[in-house]
Amino acid sequence: MPPLSAPPPTKKALALIFVIVFIDLLGFGIIIPILPNFAQRGFGASDAMVGLLVGIFSFMQFIFTPIWGRISDGIGRKPILVFGLMCSVVGYLMFGLANSLTVLFLSRMLSGLGGANISAAQAYIADVTTPFNRAKGMGLIGMAFGLGFVFGPFMGGILVAYGYEYPGFVAAGLSAISLVTTMIALPESHVNRTKKITGITASLSGKALFTALRKPFMGPMLILYFFIIFSLANIFSTFPLLAARDYQLSDREIGYLYGYIGLIGAIVQGGGIRLLLKFIPEEKLFVIGNGIMMLGLILIPYAGTIPLLLVALTLLSIGNGSNNPTALSIISNHAQSEEQGGVLGLTQSLSSLARVLGPVWGGWIFGAVGHAFPFLTGGVVMIIVLVASMRIKPEDKAQAKPAQNESKLENV
Image (tube, rainbow, N blue to C red; front, side, top):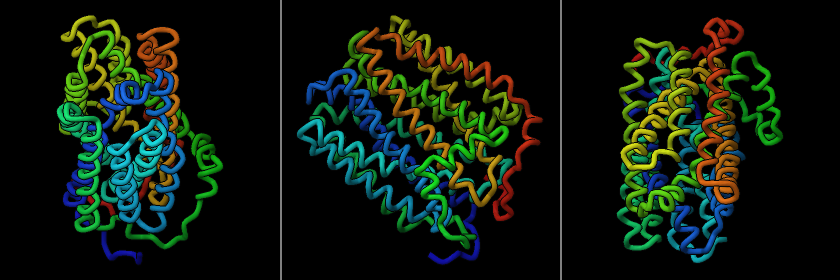
């Protein structure tokens, strides 16, 4: 694809990428709350097998997210977004048609391959925002995730009453809508594509990751981000099981709880973070979010009642809604403009690895040791993250080169 003459208008571009990511994540949100119980009730999967099933999606993202990000630096963001959405459509169709645990695994692998295009979506936002406004821009993706978890689980809870295949078919249809919208309406954002695609082999070998981890300030931030996602991922495969066994909730009610989590996250990562950043520097908001998330994780298994469980989930959502976009913004602001896709791809690759290890660990320890332990593991890890993040000081930024991108516009 030849270089374009100018970047798309910021507000239009951000609105489109938000809609595209939201529709795609809506399908993702439909599947996640029902997946653990579907695997166990439909195919007799063990607690540990559920962890593997949840983790395989993220394993594919771990492998392919940095590759898609690197390729998008060379050929543009739009082709990668389109290809990923195609994979999502087919993956969700396979979910709806699954007649064995093997097919269910294959469907999640293909959906994970498609979901790896999130690095291209984040790089798109980096293309059309300034470093000053980037946290707000990254917050839009977080808001899209949050809204996807508001309406997606709610829809999944309703649809599952008619059979586990219906959520898969609806998710496929939603991803198809996002695919068509991307192909027709989304302009390309990466306008200065003059270099060849490089770094694919390095991404596969881990060389690019190790190079990034050795950089001052960026390396520690990448490590902290990994452990934040690991802490949260511990409960991906286990919260639906905990809710069903310890709180006697149905699939529909579990979907409603996921919807509540998404609603709070959407509020925080949408307008909430814009307001907070006017009074609190990114680094301090990052620390505060880590502390709040830690409390939420520890409280979830000991809430005892639904009202107290809602309090714990509120803390979890507020904390993650604060620390996730600020971490991404801090990392992005320490990457050069020509390596945004690659760096953000590495960031998402690390988070994908955390989403592999977290559910696998959480599923195993849930069944082998006790229902509370996935949540306690996340809480203990977040204590370490909190202490480490308190040591990050703004003057550390002087050791790294901030991103420079003259084509980015000021308004978000």
